[in-house]
Length: 276
Length: 293
Image 1 (cartoon, rainbow over the protein chains, first blue to last red):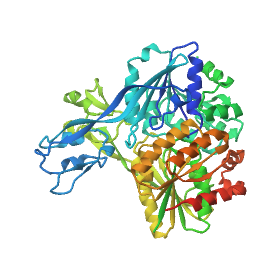
Image 2 (cartoon, chains in turn yellow, blue):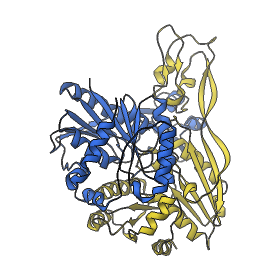
Image 3 (cartoon, rainbow over the protein chains, first blue to last red):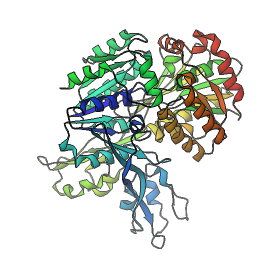
Image 4 (cartoon, one colour):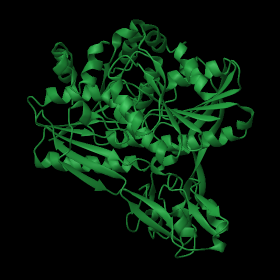
């Protein structure tokens, strides 16, 4: 079973809950935790895991053979990412960080002056602790597109997925392409939220996204006693889902979190009961 | 000259919108200000500023998606691997390609390899740019990405263009920009052209890790920046570590905010903290005074 831990708003407790869930589930099941927040992966920090580098993630980039280039500007014309600058009678200039590797420039070149080269866009790491496996991927700083990193991580895990009972996918905040890539292929999404108007507004967005992607969702309410629970209840009702666990605001949780340690919490078992 | 100040954090939920709202309200007291929400995935600044409805809502199209327009194309099968985003699969029954619109980035590579008349690229209305006047007197422009759509970077660029136009027309002194978490395209699009960046963080290992990553992006664009430490008292030894880090890297600390449930109540009541707990006004004023552009 593949379960995404998501939520829309940042800082609601996605990583805290993902790591605590992985520790608890791994007591009886085979578990893989995937940190798909490739902009800012943090699960290994919370778990104090020293990661081992598995491989670099490459992306195709164009390389020009200027002897063949006739300065027609076709490549710049088809590039929708504006990664190729063309000034009349000059050779095209290429901005690597903007390239998404789509290969349209290569396909469009009338003189075949552009060939395939590659650049590193991120790195995949692995780790092990508490009897479960961790896979994380990190985007190279300055690179823009997070979803190819998420997709590379998913592809990398595919080889070993069958040996696990549970695969937990900790997503980034927000609701755009990297979150969509992380959610696709999941059997269930756990949306972590908090009882504030911001938490509710972003929960509304992420549950709508799950609905569009046809992924069933359940809600975890963190810091459940600080704010107004009715805000969340309204949203939950709208999407015909339910709150499966409420995690109260506790000093011990804040302390463990601020030290970067996994939390121990009764409410995590409630979530597990729902998953079985 | 209008100055643009962008608020970012790397990690989510550390207080970007809370900081932006109070700074905006305070700055607007003696400057002409425009607030912009560039967290187009999950825009919240309007909520924090008590905006219920926008005066104008404009749909924008910054994204394209491929669509199969042919009934059948048996010869197309060999070309489906052209899509590096994995958005094209094969419909064996109808002998034609199928496009997964959630994975399609609109790059147009498929259109270049498939025969004429198989694929069409269509512009998609993927976002809204909403504008309104807040009850504090200054205007707010907020970008909203449509659910399931892509291209947040391009949407943000459009939102900022609109903001710059309005700022010029209304002779604004300051544009304050709230950005999204992370370090990728939305954040890069948000900080481009900024005169100053305020990075907000909290004393936790995750937040520091993410802060370091996002600051490298800011340095890449050569924009001056300063730091605000939120919830500084939840882990005092770690705050000292943050102070050492900023000292070593010559990053000015503009201000420190304590952990106080008053911040949660201000969010629940949809009011900036300086309104619900005026005692904090002096900390925000100190932040403003410490900004050097």
